[in-house]
Every structure is written in C-alpha cells, then in structure tokens.
Length: 142
Image (tube, rainbow, N blue to C red; front, side, top):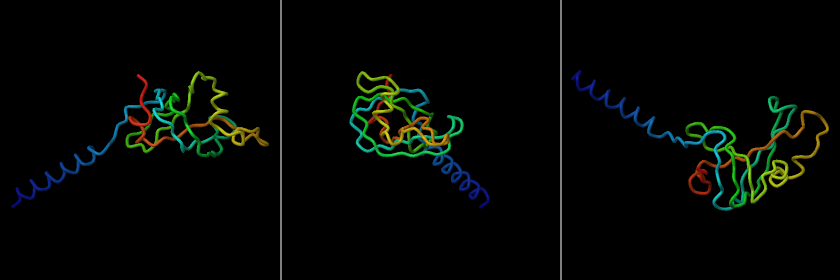
C-alpha cells in the first residue's frame, strides 16, 4: 500500500511539473528586434509618457491609433515569458525614418503639446500590441 501511494504521488508531481512548464510561451523577441506590420492595424493603443526625464516618468496617457501595413516597429522592451503584449515603437513608415515625423504621425498633437509644468513634459511613447499578432499581423524582420 505504501509503494502504491508513493507511485501515485510521484506521478501527480510529474504531471504538475509538466503542466507548469508546458504552458509557457517564449516569443523569442528581445528589445531592439525589428517587426514589420503585415496588415493595417486599425485600433491599437499607444501610451505617451510624461515627466521631468525618462528616469522620472510621472504619468502616462494614451489613445487608439491606426498603424499602416508595412510599418517597421522596434521592440521597446524584451517581453517576459507569458507576456500578453509586445511594447513597440515605430521606426519606419514608407520612406520616413525621422523620429520627430513618426511621432507626429502616431501621437495626436494634444498629447505632444508643450506643458505648463515640467512634470507634464512629453517624453516618449510606445504602442502595445497583443502577442497574438506576432507571426500573423506582425512578423520579425530577419
């Protein structure tokens, strides 16, 4: 009887361990990787960050934007295992690679306007894409 319980408990522990590791999803993306949009993304969220400096972000604000097909995006931060989103920033649309022009294309003026106080200074923006888009609506540039 004692051996039987040991076998059952060992089998249950192995099934639990396999279940825990089998569900993780490694995207194979890291910060700086390039992605290309393979179809127009009509309703994606951008987040604008505000504060005194990049190291002192005070708050964020954002809206829904459209990202045209062919846009090249750069992965902003390496997604964690089981991440739900990929944070990216556009680096090329058509022939445009100028960061200021790209910001004007993707961030409406009301989010870029000069601030009345230093903590409201527009610093940068990122776009959050669902990981489900990877491999379908966005592909890694090799």
